[in-house]
Length: 71
Image (tube, rainbow, N blue to C red; front, side, top):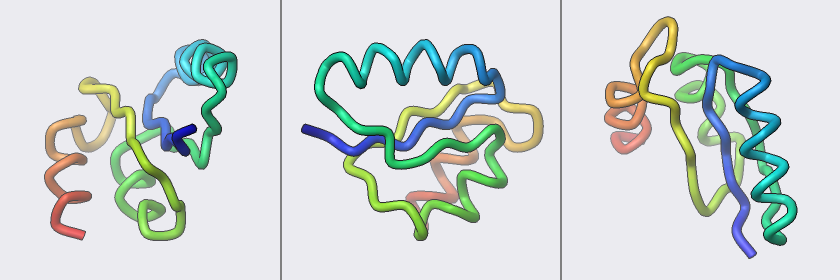
């Protein structure tokens, strides 16, 4: 199954999403609570998929995705 990187400023939401994914047989390769951490740690985390919240406190989800795609 897939290794998934979760990016959401709400720990509660990360836990709910992780629970659903784990029950489906996936693994959580990493988590970040803001866009900056997601961009900085993306190279360190081996993942097949990234789930990003659009409303993040520092860099919004769209800009986070743009920066990750450049990496």
